[in-house]
Image 1 (cartoon, rainbow, N blue to C red):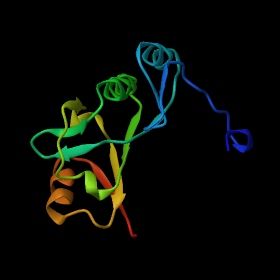
Image 2 (image 1 turned 45 degrees about the vertical axis):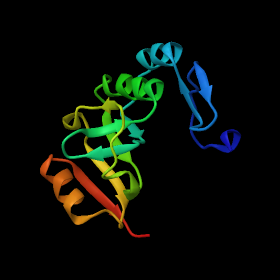
Image 3 (image 1 turned 90 degrees about the vertical axis):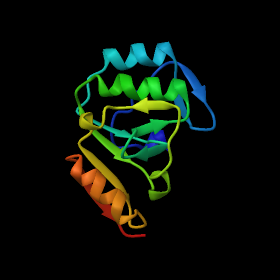
Length: 126
């Protein structure tokens, strides 16, 4: 798949987590600090109005927070099942995110809370 990508692909160093298919760890964080980018698409494991975005894996959450330190446009890309769940590790703050892209099964109350937090929400029909 990568060999046919129409754009340049930069792979970060670190520990490869098979389950999430992501790179994590101090080496990944260091690589992120050396690369400049304007947009980041971020997956989350949970969201509640009281806690904001959360993750279940400490090392993945640390990498996401390193990305958020870059001051790029931060876009949450997640399915609606994550709303209402809360996990151990905070991702955020919520104000650091610009947009959320999710599916049409999101509850109206969650959509209202996200929009009240000044996030632009794009709902995709499924």
